[in-house]
Length: 125
Image 1 (cartoon, rainbow, N blue to C red):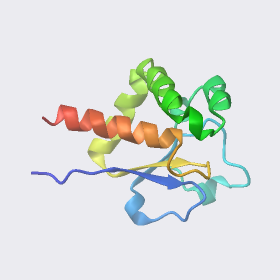
Image 2: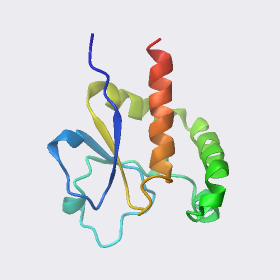
Image 3: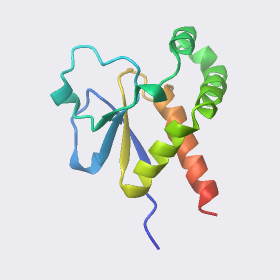
């Protein structure tokens, strides 16, 4: 049986590593002060990011985290093509979702990873 791969998370500013596998930047805006070479992103998937309106509304306020998760999941449900692409990439290799925000526990990449891993668990049953 094949070893289950996890979807990894990493700040785009952190040093790339071979174990990152396919590095996918999931921010709508390019990270400040970072060259494309330094980012070492294999794919920039802007469409996977929350809408500008949702991103601004959330503003990384922890009190809005639960509502943000639900609203972002609703947005992603309207874009099944994005989830299909990420699941396909993940089937082929390790995928590391890259993000720029300082908060490593409450950000959109966390929601996206959790959604992809939940869907993968359901489909493997």
